[in-house]
Picture 1 (spheres, rainbow, N blue to C red):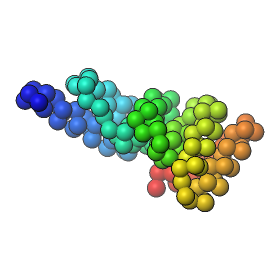
Picture 2 (cartoon, rainbow, N blue to C red; picture 1 turned 45 degrees about the horizontal axis):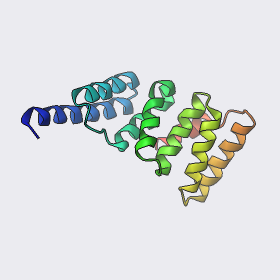
Picture 3 (cartoon, helix red, strand yellow; picture 1 turned 90 degrees about the vertical axis):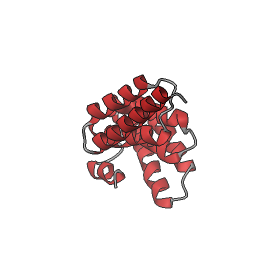
Picture 4 (cartoon, helix red, strand yellow; picture 1 turned 135 degrees about the vertical axis):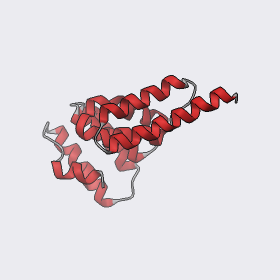
Length: 145
């Protein structure tokens, strides 16, 4: 890899790390901007699915519409990851995509061994099917722990 490309890659990695830190501090739009800058520096570099998931997971509580594309990208890069599907399900529910949320929660249920998570997600699915609000503010806050 030529030196200039390496510098761009390092700069991109630094921007992604900065974006991950920003979104965890609640600075969602600044985090999205950092990811966009990183993509522009080196369009051939694939930002890791874990980074997209971090942007999705921490950004959805404040600005789900702003990070839904990050959630979609995380799922596209790691479709079998139950945590990624679960996070996108929450974001979809928060943006009004009930059918998409249900599909993601069903995938999350299949991908976990936790009886507690299965029960909780099935409850969310049942509420979504009834067109009810699927989760409480407390449940949302606990997802970040």
